Image (tube, rainbow, N blue to C red; front, side, top):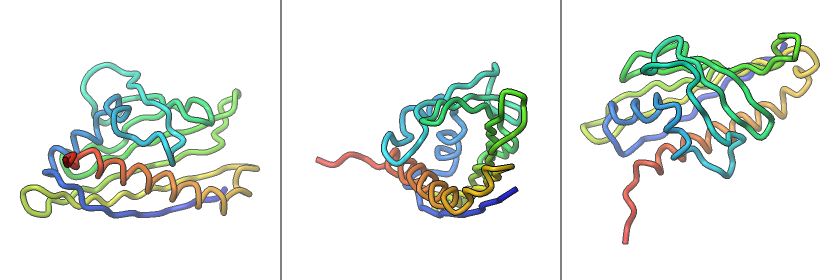
Length: 155
């Protein structure tokens, strides 16, 4: 087993409640998550009702489909997702816990601390150095897309 942990911070030009709502809107990710720099193609919620702990979803990525669920939902301060990739027999090859901690910085800005923990099992553990690079790139692209999604167009 190999684990990778990282944290990235950005200041988002929006109130904390709006930033949390955007992060918690699983299908809304499709409107702002980047097409470049990300393996994510789309996300869809697979359980009914409002997003909260236990809400399930499925990501369509360049590497295939991965199920997941919300494991922490403390609006508007903390949100954690958990996704996994398993073999056909159910053995988990890789899994990740992307999380967001939000802190109001004045009325119109939010500091977002984006942490991620990834675990690779079995033969996939040998790819830890590559996993670290890919995870940092993916998480940075996501956080920068979040910031851009709140910026007002000029001109």
